[in-house]
Every structure is written in structure tokens, then in C-alpha cells.
Length: 332
Image (cartoon, rainbow, N blue to C red; front, side, top):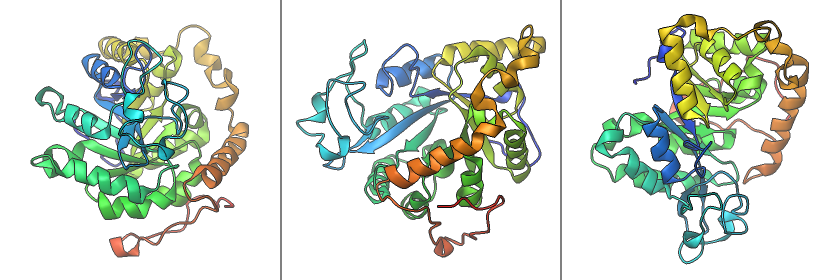
């Protein structure tokens, strides 16, 4: 499914894409080739996965900065080499799998039957983009006709503004999406520099979130929502007209979307849920969002490879106009 960003145009449910969050991670080890392949077979239009760099510069598809939670390995990825160490780690969850490299996932995308599949690359902020992006560019450019058959299907998911300049420098043909759960940070630091936004579902439920969706549509920017596993949230997300829904439950989402296309009445929330949905989870409350904003800001200032206040990089050499924020600035 090709991307169509028509200003003022919301997608119909049948046109909303399903992106497998870490693959088909509801029932397979997350961020593994087995999980990615299963998501594609279950009907995903795209894969969402994360990248970290090892001490010897190998790019891994892995969510956490440490190996401990999901594998037999231990410790920080950036402090250990792939060769002889991390290459031997295996998933704890069965079926037991190795950790895939970025190179292997790109190869999977280039298989003839998978050339329709997108990859949303969550660039974890613990990594120096000057380590990540040149190596990613080398891997991508190895493929024949990569500018036309691969680059248009790759999206750089950026949490931190420090990644913007490196993205423009090393991977200029790739689209840039901001990932986050703060709309004020999204507007202030990423609105002009990014082609789209991947926002946590609860942040988009209220009036402020719906206004953000409308602004994205008006500006021709893509909007995606994560991580949507609950059937009620799936129905609500399908009603928003976003580009894509990220889910661990690819098969369940695809089935529900197909049901809605066949019978639009099935988009409605059942019973009393249609009246109380917005009050069913504290994370949906607009009053909680300033605290959530602060959480993301604190995370960005402390977890980034280069801790400190948020600063918008100078992008003038890329003909980027760093315009003032749409919302009042976030205190960095």
C-alpha cells in the first residue's frame, strides 16, 4: 500500500495500515525474524522494530538497551561486541531465536514477496546517531536500485532532536517520523523536520489529540498510533483516519479491520463502551497529559546518548526552516 498524504484527507478504515509492533510479538519472541515473517503472513503492511549498536558497530533489531529481559545475554548492548558475544544470545521466549541484525531484516524486506512491506525503524536514543546512521546507510545502499525499491519503504523513527541532523546527512532519502507521547515536544522540535508522527494511543484520545490529528492531516503529514492491542482501542483508532496502527496482535487487527470494511456497523464500540470509553483509562485524561509530557522530557534529557537540555539543531544547511513552536515551548 503506497503512502498518500493528501492535505485534508482522512483514511477510511480499509485504507488504514497495520504495522506489526516488534513483529507479531503477541505470540512470538519480539524483534526476531520469526516474528517479522509471521507479521507479514498475518497481513501487516509494515514492521516496527528498534535498533541498537554493539560495541563493534553491528546494528541489532532490539528494543531494550540491555539484553537481560528477553534473552540469555546480560548487560548493555553498546558495551559488548556482536562477534563472539551477543551473536550467541538467544531469546528466552520460545520458539528460541537469535537476535537479528539490521542487515538481515533489510534482506527480508528485499525478498520478492516482501517488497510491499514498510519498516518503521525506532532509533533508540541511547545510541549515537553518528554510529547508527552511517552503518545503516552502508547496508541499505548495498542493494540494487535501493533508491527506488527500498528507501521509500524505510522510515526513521526519531525520539530526540539530536538525531535530526544525522538523519538528513546520512539517510536523506528516508522519511522521518517523530515517535513520542508528548504533543508539545512533537510540535516544538519535530513539526517542520518530520514527515509524520507516531504517537502513543492515549495521548490522541482527548480534544488536544484529535486537534493534533486534524493538524497533521491539514499539513499532509502522516499520523500513526501505538501500541494498540485492545479491541476497543482498535475500533477507536480505525475511526480516526490515521495512516497506520501499530499492534502486537497483527492477525486480530487485520481481522477486525476486514470485518469493519464488510460491515461498517462493527466499527462502533459495543454496549456502554461507546459512552464511557474516554473515561475508562486515566491515561486518556487530558489533565494527566502534562505529567506525561514531563515524563518524556525527563526521559529525553537523561536517557539520551548525550544527556542534557533539549536543543533544536541547526538544519539550515538542509534548507530546513526551523520555525517557532506551534505550542508554548517546553522548558528544557
